[in-house]
Length: 159
Ligand SMILES: Cc1cc2nc3c(=O)[nH]c(=O)nc-3n(C[C@H](O)[C@H](O)[C@H](O)COP(=O)(O)O)c2cc1C
Image (cartoon, rainbow, N blue to C red):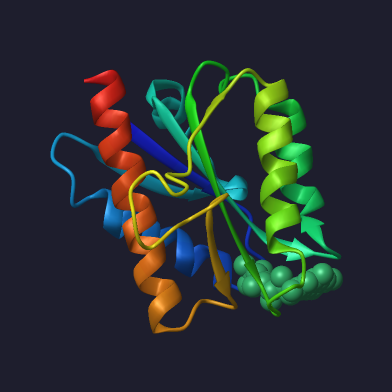
């Protein structure tokens, strides 16, 4: 079962977090994970993926217009399980708004949404993983746990 991680990253933080989430997801058996920038989408992989995890930097308190533009045009995400993560420079800088804005668009696209929330105990991950820049040690660990949880849920739902 394929899991695609689709992100926009200008200065590399979001890419690094995408790779951490991929590392966590790969801990689960029977999943094939690929992390890809919107500038280098593997459409064949994405078409086959049952799960798409979107990541964005927080830009002016919401998600990047580049990813919005990509999502607006995306035709191959409906019906898939989706999850989100964001990077930001500051706590309170809008990462959660960025995440909820992505989630709003995913619902419009007909995606299913999961974050693990409080359902899987600590650490709680309410809307999606958040890292300040590319994350301190705790945030990096949470990003890996987030990837693992999404992959486990996907196997439960789709395998
Ligand atoms: C134009 C611009 C606007 C930004 N706006 C915010 C913001 O509103 N809140 C915040 O916390 N960080 C903001 N940032 C910081 C980025 O979200 C942060 O550095 C992010 O990790 C960059 O991701 P990237 O390295 O993947 O491009 C902004 C950065 C840029 C370039």
